[in-house]
Amino acid sequence: MEKHFASVISYISHPLLMPMLGLVIISNSGTYAADLDQRSTNLIYLATFLMTFLIPLALMPLLYYTGLAGNLEFSERRERLLPLYLTLVFYLAAYFFIRKLPISQVYQRFMFSACMSVLLVLAVSYFWKISAHLVGWGGVIGLILVLSYKFGSDMMIFLVIAILLAGLTGFARLKLNEHYPLQIYTGFLLGFAVMLIVFSI
Image (tube, rainbow, N blue to C red; front, side, top):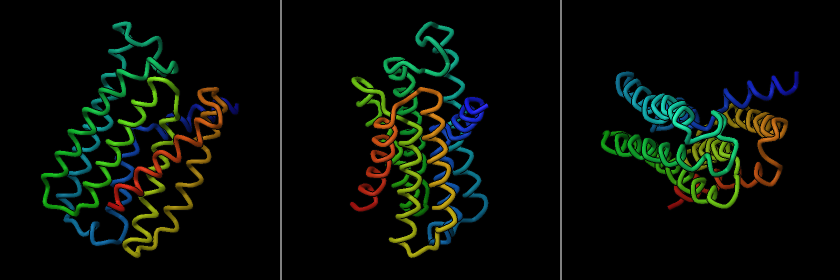
């Protein structure tokens, strides 16, 4: 029962969903970055969903059926490399798309942070298996804190929910034996640090 619950949590908090989640948080943050008309918001949502989630996810089974991955979970460290390269390409496409739009730089910096996080996970994955799930949650929590302290927005409800979900995700990854604690903590700190650094520059 616990493993079934852990699997569900692991899927619904998939790293590919984090960019979309981050943009939803920004557009509902109450900051000036959220001051977009509905058409622009929908365009950003649609493009981000396609480029950072739907297209990369659709390509993953191809890696399995062509023998480039042993399973669809990409549990082995080296099996993650090609999916990460593909993910990075589409994240960069989303970043350059958002960069061309006449919108707040908050969106651009967030997507740039996401790209940097994927790049670092890719680099680390050549010699160590870091938790991409927790990298994503670290980035989301870092974003919430940036919006709260740098822009003076009340983000407490977002922060509490994100911390709870990050904790559940960490539990799930440990329960499924996908990671050990150091990989969980390191992943979270990496995503968190990248977000804070990019917004501090």
